[in-house]
Length: 362
Image 1: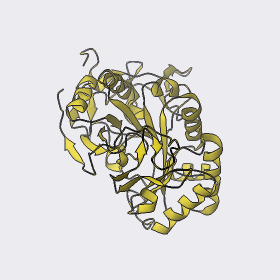
Image 2: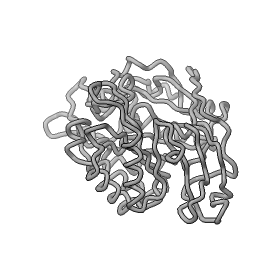
Image 3: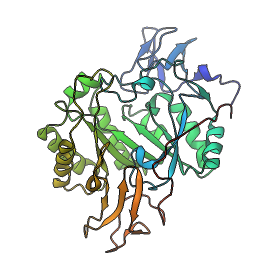
């Protein structure tokens, strides 16, 4: 790590001076305006000596080797392992956050491991990981660190994955995604009102990120929507979202509907019933979407990948483990139709294990 870049005061990007003497962060659509010593909404970007700094560069809330299916990514090297890590803070304020102990932490509360980008890349190789994932909290807020890690990983042939809410500006999007190989974007709800009430943010920038990824980058993208009973699981919203995805992103983008469990500030809502996930999947498929999944539940039909031409199951999963493989060079083993995604000759053998690791000091 460059000694000139102290981890707690790493020079931040995407900011400008405002006419009133504050500096304006232009990384995400909040456009936080800061006076000396103030933090942005995310808490990890701060004004120090008339400049923006990132206070979590080089520091992590912990590392874990996961199955890639846990991100979830079903069409990006299935069965392989991914070295996952996050930092602290978030630029959204989701009342239902499932990782609130990290995303809502102040910058120093949860940061236990220090690692350089090169150290993370070397650790991924040593651990046999095909990719590294920026996850648990949103990599947008630690973009400088994530981009440096991604660049180091490319030197070792390791892919980089962003698990993100997609809440960023047109100014920051292109540079960030030049470094990323795959992304899972949370489409948290299907109305502007939902985003304002429950995420303290806006829907349109997320839709812009999804369109940008699909139309202007080679990044492999999948979508996740956590369905919350009584909040974002109504038929009208699901029909609108499915039509929007089909029209703007195409029918081959994988979409994961996952089950909510009561957490953080939504302890008064029940868990998502299986029937809701099945209904959402059917609605999405009725609009022509080819690869729609259910998650956080045991649902063999909703876990499988099916050939859009002949209907044959080409990949079956039990939880996060691949149990059936009927692909040949990314084509259906029954009819030779191309299956959209990044597939190896055979699936990885990592299984469903989750293995915490320490790589501090490298």
